[in-house]
Amino acid sequence: MNKIKLRKLEDIFQNKDVEKPAKGFFTRANLAQAWKISEQQANRKLKKYVASGLMETKCYRVKSGQVTRPIPHYRIK
Image 1: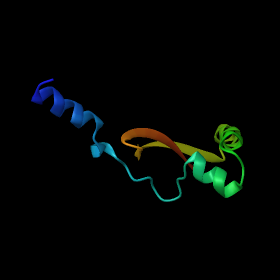
Image 2: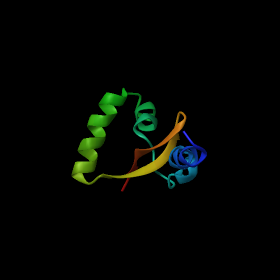
Image 3: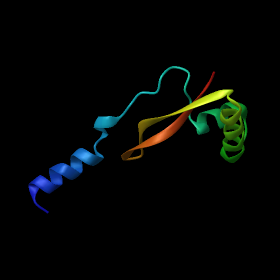
Image 4: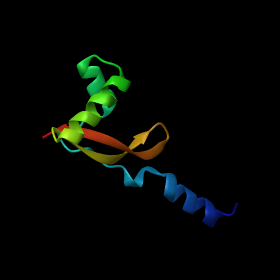
């Protein structure tokens, strides 16, 4: 692999696109911990709440381990 290809790969996988979630947005794990339920149960509740319009969802690119990936965050309307 030459230097140019390596630089392109680094640009893709670096955390240049990391976004800070807006105030009031929480991940499924955060909400599950606050509600004292499992993440699977929280996921079911969140799907119902989003479908009924009680909560809104937005994907933010956050660092997860060594990579940056889009993770849905939720907020009560």
